[in-house]
Image 1 (tube, rainbow over the protein chains, first blue to last red):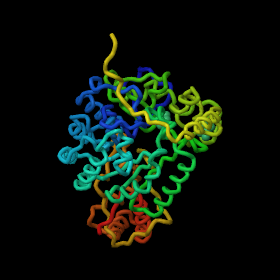
Image 2 (cartoon, each protein chain N blue to C red; image 1 turned 90 degrees about the horizontal axis):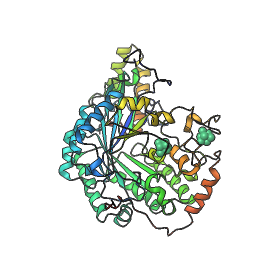
Image 3 (cartoon, each protein chain N blue to C red; image 1 turned 180 degrees about the horizontal axis):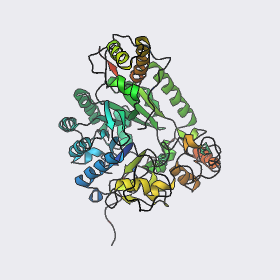
Image 4 (cartoon, rainbow over the protein chains, first blue to last red; image 1 turned 120 degrees about the horizontal axis):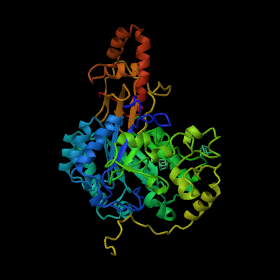
Length: 379
Length: 106
Ligand code: SF4
Ligand code: SF4
C-alpha cells in the first residue's frame, strides 16, 4: 500500500491488513424482541438510519478496502423496504452477500426478488424448535409458524441456508431437534451458539445462563452430531464461556478481520464495542471507511498486543485468544484492557465465578425483552 | 467469517473416486481479490484463500469433468506424475466436501 502524499504524516503503527468481513446493521427495528439481542440497550430509531445511497456508497468503499463478505443484519434487515436494492448494490460492488434474518418480514415474492438481486446466502435464526418456545423467546406470537413458511420458500428457491440456534438455559434441551431441523430443511450449516452476554443478554443473565451440566451436555451432543453428520451438516459451535477456563478469542484480534456499521453509520470494531465508554467512534457520514479502519481511534485502541497488561502481556496464549473479549473485560473487571475474566489467570476471574453461581441459581428468573425506549419525552 | 488457510488433505477424509464429478454448489464461488492480489473461494461464512495449486484444481471444476479428467489436465499442465496429482487433488477436494463447500454429481 502506498501513501497518497509522501509528505503526509505517517501513522505511528504499521498499516493494518484489510478487513475480510463487514456486518451492516441496517436497522435496529425488529418484530421480535429476543431477550438476548446483541443490539445495544440504546436502540437507534428509524429516523437516524442511513439512507439507501449512503449504505450503497459504504458497500463500495468496503469492497475497495478489501472486504469480501457482507453480512446484512439488524435488527431485522427485512424491516428495511430497500433491502433488495441494497443486496443488488452490494453484489454490484463485488461483495458476497449474506442475509442474517429471523425470517419475519420476508414473503415468497420478496425472497424471489432477493434471489434475482443476487443474494448469496441466508442465515435464519431459530429461537426454539416449536411454537411454544420460539414465540415465548422471540416475544412474537405466530413467529414460529411464519418462520416455517419462510424456510419452505428458501428451500424452493434453493438459497444456501445456515440455521442459527441461540442456546440458553431455557431452550438448550431443544438442541437435538434443532439439528434435525437443519437436516430437514436442507441447511448446509448450523451455528449452535450459546448465548453471549452482551447487549440485552446482560440484563438476562439470571434467566439465560446455562448451568454447568447443560453446557457439558451441549458439548457432548455437538461432538456426537459432528461425527454422525460429517459431510452432511457443518456444525459451528460456540460453547458457554462463563464455564470455560480460557476465553474465546476476540475474532482474529481486535480491528484485524472485520468491522460493523451501526444503523446510524457509526463504525464499530465489534457489535458490543459501544459498551466501552472510553472508545471514540466515527461515522461513514463524516469519514472514509478506509481511514476509519486504519487510523480510527476505536480500531487502534486494542489492535495488536501493545495495549495488553499482565497476565496477558507475558502469556503464551496472547496470540491465540488476544486476551479474550474487551467488552467482557469492561463489563466485569471494569477495565477494557484487562484480561477477559473468563480466563482463570485473570484477576477478575473469582468475581466471574461468583456471578456465574448467582446467575444459575434461580430457575424462575423472569425474562427482560428488548424494547425501544418509550417515545414520549419530556421537554 | 474468517480467512481459513487452504484445506490440507485429511487422513480420515473419505477418498474420492476418479469417476466422481465435483461441482461448486450455489453460494460458493471463485473470486479474484484485487486488493490482496489472490484468488479466494467465497462460501457461506468462509473466505478461503487459494494458493496456485488450489486455484488450478478449483478453476477446472465445471460440474462435467470428472476428478480423473481434471487430474490428467493438471498433470499435463504442471508436467507432474498423474498418480500423485490425483491423490493430492482427491485429498484437497475431500476436505472441501467435508466442509460442504463442494458437492458431487449424483
Ligand atoms: S492471560 Fe490473557 S492471553 Fe493469556 S489466556 Fe488469559 S486472557 Fe488469554
Ligand atoms: S470485544 Fe468481545 S464482543 Fe467484541 S469481537 Fe471481541 S470478543 Fe467479540
